[in-house]
Image (cartoon, rainbow, N blue to C red):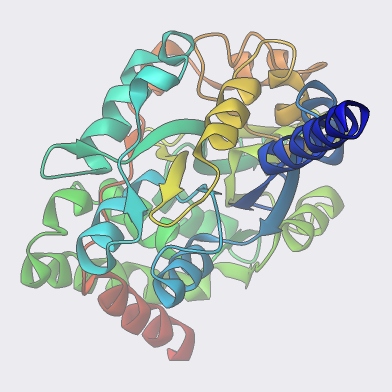
Length: 357
């Protein structure tokens, strides 16, 4: 009986050990952008944390909000919406939980970006996000063909009729507004004031149609236009311009003199996420100096750490440093919180521009 009792205890101990180990294993369900969780980084993370499996779902701002709204904030453990998309969605749908800054290596982050996100992505003083990636929208210019182009409305200069392009999205509306001397972000809270600004923007961009060669719709589309010389200037994402500069040095990213448009993508916890510990481990892992170059190589953008530019891979560091002066960086117009009604006004104007003769 003594032997049998000992054997039963040993069996029970093994069972508890196995079941206890299994209970610690978890899946980290990411809701993120297509290049933000490269396979190489996932493998390195899972090698260090073998009890965590990373399961990414690739999405965009609109889809992230729609997915979390539909589930009440469940189904994912970490999301990466733009910082100006968090507060309004949280206020209306309650899909996020407060983020614990004490569990994040905030010392690694750029203080200005951290404060920007804490301010814009907060609801009633509660912080819901921290910054991860950042970048800008501005101009790409073939300096051998159009050296004087340096602001948004220069794309409409009749001198370059049939040689410029743009993308009909919010960025060209906002950029044009800044070039006209307005601050569209300050008008978001007053839809009548914003409509008045966009009416003026619409007049300019409809008149501009006689100059524009074509409207591009994706990065490959723009790349073909610029590399072929069919177009000498366009609005662009900075990451696209950096890549094109590597292929053709005359293609240069130009921060518009009226202001480059800045964005910051965040780390944000869905309200019913089930793997907070794993999420915080993933956040801190991606802020490590040895991981930052891998993320930037995948995204083409800059990690929002103090050394994010310094740790850019290959010649991307030189290209970025050559693209921005300190004045350019100080003149970045970081996006404002998207309030209800803003996108409707913009959507109507974009359709009107498309339809205009």
